Image (cartoon, rainbow, N blue to C red; front, side):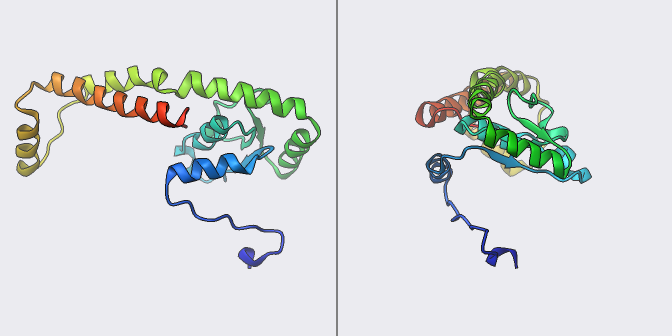
Length: 179
């Protein structure tokens, strides 16, 4: 019965990321919630919701769980565990516009420092330069060799990392910070 509950608004599906970003920005949220159950499978999630909220300037309340260990409580977001702490966190944001404002700025700066292309590209490049060769089928090997014109493996890795950098940078230039 939840979809028909009178206090629930179902938001339309966005078919592209660009539409989703525009939609998020149009909402002008005061703060966002990122609850996460303590199921073992959630230990393997990452902090995408933090990155997304930070990029959009949305202060967030996050589950006090492993994926959100990078959130500094009261600085880059608020952490909540039980029902009462979720309520208290929401009340803090509702009653303290200065806190919301500070978290907006600090979360964005933290996300840019840790997650921006300039911050992660060296790790990607290092990974691609040291990644072992992947065993593939003969058909894939032939296609790869024909497209690469028999360039050495380290040179291919560098070329791949440059392509990733180029793609990522063009996205940043087009849309700004990407979570």
